[in-house]
Length: 110
Length: 113
Image (cartoon, rainbow over all chains, first blue to last red; front, top):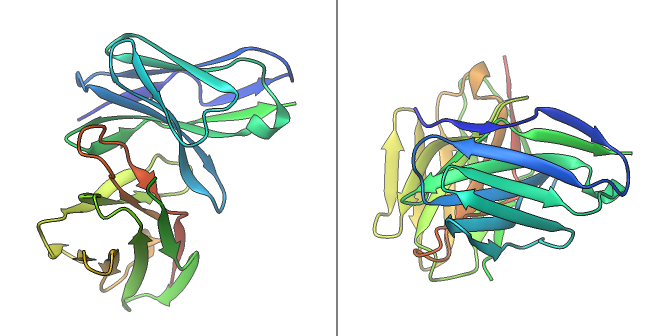
């Protein structure tokens, strides 16, 4: 089974903090994604990466950056957390379009 | 870019009845259409998918149909059971190379016993 693991299930951070969300996959997938899930809005793509050190903006990249130094690891960075970034964050990896998700990180910014 | 619309946002059906969820997409270049099920507190999981060279696909009680001309696809669940209660998401992949998925807004399906 594909395993996608996010480093934290729940996080509480203060406004202005720099926040790191980590994701690791064990299936040697080329593609990795960060989505944000909000009620009524579905899953919105923040950033994705199709190779080590390669990244592309998704639909809502503002306020976020990413890092992919190794194939198995994809990090999402909130440069200066704001309350409107309170959300569920889902990491995924994919092969031949089939995406497999991590368990999610519920981030609360206070 | 690609835009996926999903309806209805909530759906309640009696156990044993059928449920249908519909999605439309905007980019005619999209060629891959998966459906994900997300149970409460859990991660989304792929339940069925279809590629643009196929019109229909079945897997036991679930089926997906695709109408490329109209740019819409649907999820059909027959003989619904309580464990079918979940949020369902449709998605479309607009570019084969990038393989990124654009998701619909989700449908909360409730099966009433």
